[in-house]
Length: 113
Image (cartoon, helix red, strand yellow):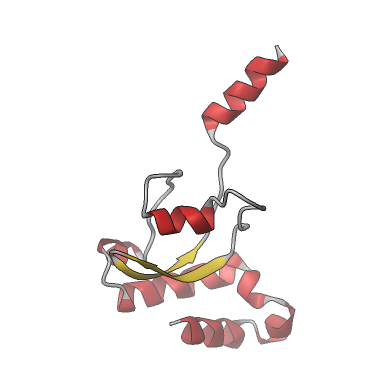
C-alpha cells in the first residue's frame, strides 16, 4: 500500500515528486482514502480509513506512541506513520489534522488570570 500510495502521488504531482509531494495532504488524502476503501479490513474502511478525531488513550496504545509521543515533537499534519502493528492488525496512519486539547488551553488561561 505504501508503495502504491507513493507512486500514485508522484503521478499526480510529478513536478514536486522530489520536493516532498507526499507531504502535500491535499494530494495524499484522497488517494489514501481510496486505497483504504479498497484494502482495509477495519470498520473504518467504508469511510476511507477515517477514524475521526481522537485523543490520547482512545485508540490502541501503539497509536498513542506515534501520534502523542512522550518525548520530542508530535508528528505534523500530513505525516504518514507506520506500519503500526496492534492487536487489531497492521495499520498505516495519515495524520490529517491536529487540534489543541481544550482542557489544556483552559488550564493555561486560568494560570494567566
